[in-house]
Amino acid sequence: MKTNLIRSGSIVILLTVLMLTSVNLSAQEKGTLQVQKQVSPDIEYMTLAKQLAQYGYEKEQALPLVNAAQILIDLSASALKVENTKRGEGEGGSKESADVTLDVQKLLTDAEALAKNDKNLTGLIKSLREQTAASRGRVGGPGYVIDKVQAGQANIHEVNFVGDEAAEVAVVGDGSTDLDLYVMDENGNLIVMDEGATDECYVLWKPNWTGVFYITVVNRGNVWNQYALVTN
Image (cartoon, rainbow, N blue to C red; front, side, top):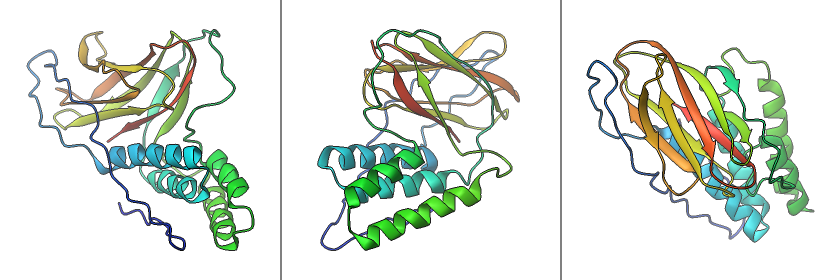
């Protein structure tokens, strides 16, 4: 997938995709083969979208927010089938808003406010809004899922993966707390996990069979965290 990034005047954004957290591999029951880390483009693009959004909010610039929204819209072309989600119900540690949003409509609204009278940017924002409106209801669903995990709580996502093929899961949070990622099979066996000290998690494994896997996102902080869940 190719993403067209927008340049305006003398503003040139140097896009550097940071390496995601190291992969922790463990063998699935019945001797799953470990697979070499090869992060899929969609997962890298999601991380890039977060970095652009973070830069835009910190520098109060509309263009990075528009670029982040464009990436997220492009990602919606690939299907992510999340069958079911169970959310933690804790209410402690509330905050007014996410540090970095990955919601396309909010990114566009915030970009519009920052763009002010820039006709080129406001035109692009209008075009992206029309693009997102046209894609609603598309068969196959979005290419990623945005969710919120409460302070000290865990969300569990139920996802189907194909046996004997590399399976990837990434979580990209809003930057406010540490998130940990765990994958279990339908028998309750822990397959792989990422317990790094950030809210960007990545795991890779090869299932022995086609079936349901349970992806758990745990919030180790004292405020909620809005995150994107992406799979290959």
